[in-house]
Length: 266
Image (tube, rainbow, N blue to C red; front, side, top):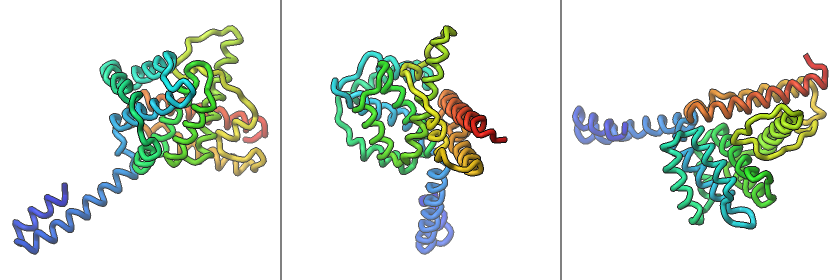
């Protein structure tokens, strides 16, 4: 945009030499603005985010031996879309998903292109959705988990971030199942269908720190993760996505609290 404006203004005031200088200067401004957009993470619009979610849904749904989308998985996706984007967008998106399920996408290339401009927070939100999708029928097949791990790699997510998010997801479902077993009873949400497991190491995986790390290293790891998972990082994707981020932030703090209690940390 500024390239054209610079060229026009340069030509008006200085003729042909001004045109060249205006084009060069305008081009420079456009490049700087593009870099700033990428760095702030606001390049990924809700539409781009939704389209990426649907493409990855088709890839994970077709990953297991059946090669098709189960009714429970479709219900999970529909519920997620309704909560996140509303009924009008959901209706159109489900038609689009049906079409995507019949196509063969170059998933590695698509993930790489998305990763260039997406923030780590946007990538992790997608990854968390895929964990929920894989467990929508009560189990997560090895083929589905392998596809999700590959998607994570293709999007440039580190293995530590992958294991951290995975630990958050399954630890949360473990505690929710414990609550259910104690007779409290609750209405399962769109991401509570898989019964997870928990071990002491999960809390350290969530913080991406070694269990043998010093107290100071644990504190440093927590501060780093708190910045990474802060809900403000995904405000541009809408209120429901922010709520998901708030839930992850809460899980991070709960893991840190358990570690502090175990270590008698202040």
